[in-house]
Amino acid sequence: MNIKKVLICFFLFSCSSSEDESLSNENIVSSVTISNNSQSSSTRSLFCPPCQRNNDFSSYDDLVFPDFETSENKIKVKVNTLTSLNYSSSIDPLEAVKDGFYDTSWFNILINYGYWWTDPNNDHWNPDPEWYNKQVPAREPNLSNDFEECVDDSLRWKCGYSFTVELPEQYSTSKKYPLIVFLHGGVWQSRDDLRFYDNIGNTIYKFNTDPFILLTPIKLEIDWNPKKIRDVIELVAENISIDINRIYLTGISMGGRGTFIVAAENTDLFSALIPISPHHEPYSYLELANKIKNIPTLISHGDADDISSFEIASQMAEELESLNAEIIFKPFQGGDHYIYDQIYSDSLIISWLMNKIKD
Image (cartoon, rainbow, N blue to C red; front, side, top):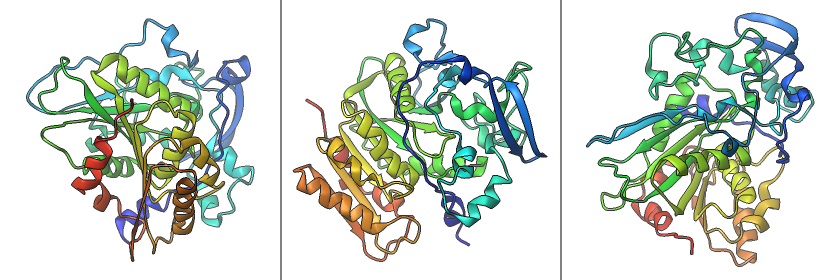
């Protein structure tokens, strides 16, 4: 089977969440049934998540952004700053499946594998931006997650996103750079999956005269969380020289649908959107059209996609057009689910994106 299909067949579905982010004891102390790769299912009671702070990161003065030095080479930084923050609106991915959100027989097999990040080989909280290329387990004491005794790592989905930031060559704080936020697809991941997604972000066409900063977060829930993404962007803006009028959002499959979901709750943030092969379940993203109608959008989808609905993507474009939105729909005749490289490597499409500037 095509390796891309093996990876992206893990693209599943989610439900939206409200953004009341106050932290309560109920969020800190919980009882959860877990299953992981190394043990059978068991119940752990009165365990705390690895993040125990309210998610208002602006109220803390001890959250440290990684140091980096400018040079002539591209700089890639891994940032775990927000993983200590607890987002009460997050949704447990396994419990969502068990509660019947998904009528997908093969997903029940995935339940047996548990929370993917509890496998030390998949521990993406490692501070090394190239952690997935290491031959040793990513989780090491004092390097990744030297948790307190009470911590139940299966609750990590409650926490803020870990992410990487790639700076262009000859990055300078005296210049403001456009920011492209890339949302990966999938739900259950491995280090190979995350390496694959990281490489996708690197296929985005680069103009020598207009370099950009690439931001790539990693999610643990089924759908992308708009508040978590906003906090990531605001943290980056506080520490790296970006042009706040040129922030762009794009993603593939679950990240394509996530592009709609995140933008709908952050309409003031983004200058343009490029959702690619957006997934259509468990609820239709068509209802979000009215919220994003003022953001220029380019939707691309292959008409032979057997994973995500081409018809729903086409309907979204029609709905946006009826709302007088600036919308481009780029169908690929005979295209399957994996058309991202044809979009991201197209200089005309990326030029369209980069020329969208908020007033």
